[in-house]
Length: 252
Image (cartoon, rainbow, N blue to C red; front, side):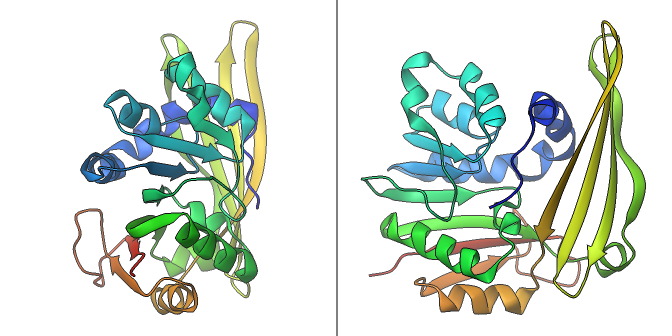
């Protein structure tokens, strides 16, 4: 497993992804959680973008993440007597002594698994933690070949105030590794503090998947029933799809 968010990125995560993601997937994942009548697990819960809202609405939800910095932010959003629901674990090896009716891994969690062995272990570990009829939902992006081949060179994807009078800027560069289907990503943050301008950098990798690769991967796992949607509205995959939204069900 990779991609343990550093403290500076955890600090600004909500600001950045409220801008980039809330209108994309919030309604879908929170709707799936609301429909579930049993226990829910969110893998890669981060700062609690879904988890805190779901818990506050009465969901019997648990959260895991590999980043202490991210979870330190999350626990500030929930009552202290609910912190037992939050733990540092990863998708490959997490363990609970009870099962779930819904497990979600939103916003590219599966793309942080670089090795095939970890991908298979993750799917089977999730399967083993589901009740019969339980579902696992995760997403990846549909590969856009041009930026994957050419990379990105210092692209600013956020430049705005994170609080009144103080600005935050994020710059992204990527170096492609098309042979291994890996994106090497460099994030650069700059922000205003009382004592002046500060900055931090973070490097991570993402493993991208093509449609039939995803299908073969799932079919090699313990899951026997699945569907791959082309968006968060449940539409089929088509040539304009930007996301693979995968729903696997534990049958039997």
